[in-house]
Image 1 (cartoon, protein in one colour):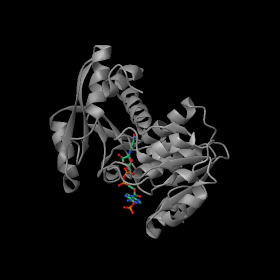
Image 2 (cartoon, helix red, strand yellow):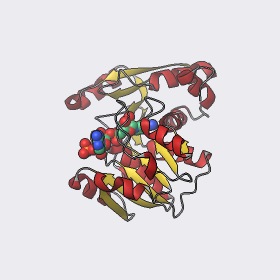
Image 3 (cartoon, helix red, strand yellow):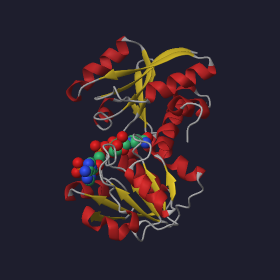
Length: 271
Ligand code: NAP
């Protein structure tokens, strides 16, 4: 099996996807490569032509193209249509088909940690692309969902992107609602730059689950607060690896070597 794969976005320099996928190729002895390819916001169509000229066999899509690419695909998987955002594209005879592996990539670690979602009170922080995938995943498992956002317009937009009933709150009410939540999910970038945690430690119940999808740093202040309270924590890298493994399986139709992909991130002595 051979071919070149890519992640497109801007910025993409920091992307961990090349590290993860190239480790999987090495592990399975596949004659493939995975590169990062910067495409600026207003150059997506030209960028896709460059990918075709370079015979890229499949690619991941990240900020800022996850929604814009939807109009440029020949075919779209139903889950991708439902979320309205695409993070994985297959290329077959020049035809592009879009998938969204963030939804199942988000759900998979919850399943692995045996977290019950049915009727659980969940609090999702954020209204962006990742929050949409999170909301779709939670709704598919019949969770009760409250979304916190800082823009009333974006709270309305996320409410209308799903058939599920969502409660919406502003960040002023996060501490109060978090205290009554079984599962708290951070789907904002808060924590990437050592900011204060979006949920204070004393609003986290010891029997709650705290899932921070931020993966760099590994231990955000929110995760530290949750550990201090004795809550179950799910790290952003777990979703990162799960969505990467799902993309890998869509392209290569074979199981992704999860442990080798994880080892590429953390070495032998990872978490
Ligand atoms: P996005 O589309 O830009 O959305 C970001 C969201 O966070 C928006 O709702 C934004 O609000 C909100 N936000 C940003 N800064 C905030 C602040 N200081 N206070 C309150 N709200 C704030 O980004 P995204 O694609 O959803 O990604 C969000 C984060 O998830 C990123 O850190 C990304 O790396 C991470 N992520 C991780 C994985 C994984 O596999 N682990 C997958 C996808 C994304 P406004 O709209 O009002 O600005």
